[in-house]
Length: 222
Image (cartoon, rainbow, N blue to C red):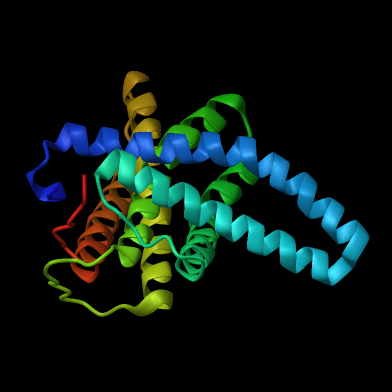
């Protein structure tokens, strides 16, 4: 029996798990996503709408399968593996990733540079790891106990994830800019307020998401 309780884990190890989850998902997604992209383009070319549908189904199955594997290896949580569960899991994950990537896309448009790309990649390893674990938690096998305190629903969860990701990205970028200003002997009161505010929103979002999902003890057969 394996008990998964992130509250009992040392904070630094918890962050490393989120970072590893997001990093591995990004690397695996990049490699296999290119292959699926080629298949998808070929399917669209030869079969138009039917090919697009097949390609999307393959993409969702891939996302769900990868996250199921990483949830087991990184967190010791076993998820449902039947096709419909994996497909639904992958669809929800794709929607969540698409929503939380909006801040990165906007920042990339107005501040495109290699340092900013590196910073966003590191930030989004944590964000993607948290998103992947949060979404995956809804497909846990046979939780022994349920303590759902807030009912958000799928759309509510995605909205809170988006707001939290936007605030978290703003908080991280704001901290970096503040450090850069302080090194130059400057300090912006407005930027300090916005950074603290985005940090508060991020914290509230994380708390809401934590209270809205199952805190479960997962049984695993060895």
